[in-house]
Amino acid sequence: MAINYDTLASSYDNHRRGGGPYINRLLELAIESNAQDILELGAGTGNNTETFLQRHPCPRFFALERSLRMLEKGRGKPLPAHWLQGDAEHLPFASASQDFIFSVYMLHHILDLDRLMSECFRVLHSGCAVFVTTTHDYIRRHPMNAYFPSFSHVDTSRFQDLPEVEASMHSAGFQHVQTEICRAAPAPIDAQYVEKVAGQFISTYALIPKGEFASGLARLQSDVAERGKLPTPIIWESAIIWGRK
Image (cartoon, rainbow, N blue to C red; front, side, top):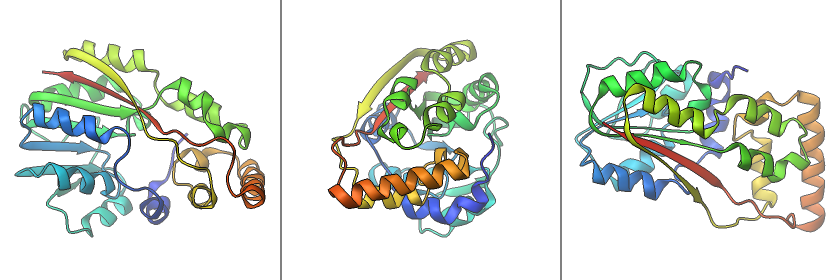
């Protein structure tokens, strides 16, 4: 299920802000690693890059992104980062050259998880490799399943289950592999949230059949217009998996 991020770059940048329930733990791990040379995988348009660098300035920050249009959006922002177009499964970096590697909601685009983890282990000098993803349980509990019947199937089919990620990290040589679940405060599913869904702010919606997406969005818009907000809030939940070298 391929996503053409070149066509989604503008919408993605408008509707996806940096940070989330994972950001504090991510920054704590960077500080614990005394990270000076940092590599972000799948940096997108730089929204998480900006949030991270505001709170953890460092001498050398590399932002790797495969999509040229996403990369152009990121390069257009006044960030102290070196932007590179490349593939996370074939990292264009010397061995033992980075102190800290992280990615935010990138793993589900990786076809060869073992290859990625081996590359991260090779490139990492010391410190951590950290991956922000989600759980199958959260996908199945997500409120948007009520509007888009394919929602759960789309995402459980592409997001690796947590034990698979942990096993791949162990296999690559990472030590002290840990997982932590972080949750944001409840937020309303209101007109502002509906606008983000309409803009397909997560790639899931681009993979739902067009007719299903249109009808589900129409029902969602109608319910929110009638009630002001849905009775069930959205509670953003992230899984952070990390290992040390």
